Image (cartoon, rainbow, N blue to C red; front, side, top):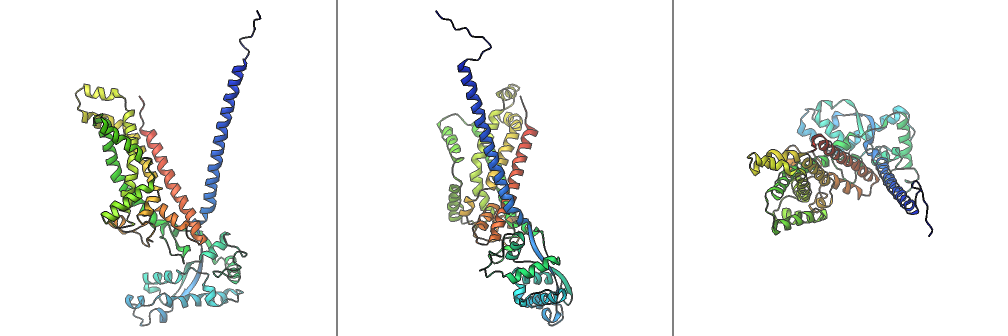
Length: 440
């Protein structure tokens, strides 16, 4: 009989295969993680490269003579009379200022004053009119005013528009770009931080350079306020009842299964429900943040209920038994002992639910939050909740489908702002979890 003599320190063929399999598995994991990180870097790099330009805008500063004979013909500084001068009355003042500028700086151009003034945004005359109406004492003086250039000039200085791409364009000419180059050298045209993008409102297709994201951010804020006020108490109350007080029977089993199923329902289904109930049946106003908040509340409730029940389950049964053993009632046990210990998980689940609701677009499309362009900030809470407005994801969707490249750039800029909000909310959730988490 032949006996195999092997040393205890030697590795058998089976062990070698098992070790090789483990190494391959680790390699596959590292490859998967590397691919995921690479995709994340590409995603973030793409968003930043395409969206950061939205936070800069091109401005031109020129001296405007506010001729009294044009703006205040009666000379009485009466606001009602001065308001009668429309934007058409301010356009000649801008054209004349360009003529003076070209002569003063010895600029070389064959453009007429009309074509020269076209390098400005179409909102230029309106901006100048509003500026004058705020301070009537400026009439008769020469003031330095900063105008937005149009989106094509802005795109040219950002590299989005080139001389090759405008050969057949009716929006801008090579002669205008030659003049712009001269004004840039003189420091009259500059790129600056675009505060209007953060504080302004959406604009028409004719004025993409004036479009801002601020009003839609306010709309999202009011929607999240509604979601928080409605979903947190309802979700926590439902979770406490189901976990601590509800009898274990087929009715509660059906309820639990349906809650789990609702968490996986596509968000557009909640939009259809909101359209049918809140708008068609209850006749609430379309595009109102209050309605949008209620629709997102329906979508967020299952997430909050599931996370809250998981937090309540994580509290050891010994805590309940000890409280009941010293004479506390079921209600006192839950609210004085179990709920405080489960609070970190509840807060985390709520914030994650709000972050999910913040980025939703489909439900808002169905209740009309892309069919209205809000031009002014709401003046109060009631107006902010009940007046038509947009929201950040809906505004991004609206800009992305427009043809002008300037809107597309702003859509990427809006994505950056939305990601900052989402990252902030998730970071707060992690901090709260670690700050208040207790270990047993």
